[in-house]
Image (cartoon, rainbow over all chains, first blue to last red; front, side, top):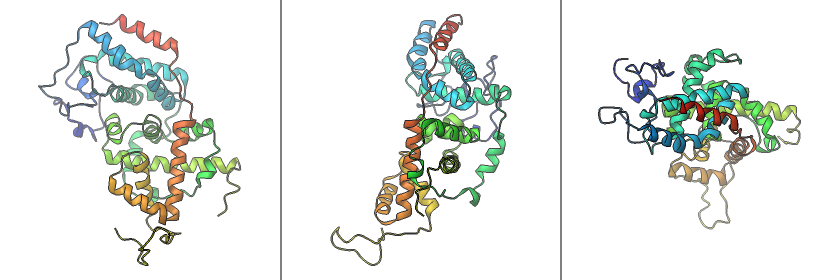
Length: 239
Length: 97
């Protein structure tokens, strides 16, 4: 941990302190850089920016605050609880301000913020979450990164069967997914991030983004199918 | 680019035969998802276009994936950040630095 890891190094290392230590140790704020810009290897020529106090507030208000609704929605979808979402968003924004010098103006602020939020969620928040963790993160990694044939399938469901579902029903189905699957669907389908951005937010390779999304969608469709058939939406599908 | 061997060479009237079954549905499904996510290559796009006139399972999967994505993007409520929280955050950062 003495060297600042490059992005690739971080991919499988279990990512220690993403909770961002206050003491600014060697693995400090650089971890935060989603490097949406040219900052692919944090190095000597990309030092922490020196913002004046005034500039800090300016960056914060101009680049960070506009994303607060998306951030809140993300937090709410992760925690499924409004109070918890409040805490998570507040923590995230305070951290973002504290580490603002590692944000480069003009780069992808939204991805940068989402990454902090997701890390806060995993490190600080999930331990004390009211919702029991349904699936351990590491478990998901190992189970679902293996390309087992079992999860490679198509779900037998017709578009017409789900077209009458309302938002709450979709939300219920989504919430019933393990959080890591829920996360990729939120990031991709609700927030519209690209695979590359998602890889950076989640610290996983792009191939894992792709396969996790595929699995997440299969799971979601199974939930939707169960839901639709329990509601009788399925009746008219002639097979 | 191999199309059906029973050539439907000439005009657009003679459509290629519609496939009812497909042996590579999982691969096609992955391709469809890439396309709907805006992550596909031109080549994959072209392949899907061809499939959409010739492969029944692809057509159905395409519609389903599109529908599910739309449920998520359009029909789920987007929670907005409470004003109170915005105010709290703004006041808290003022006491920093």
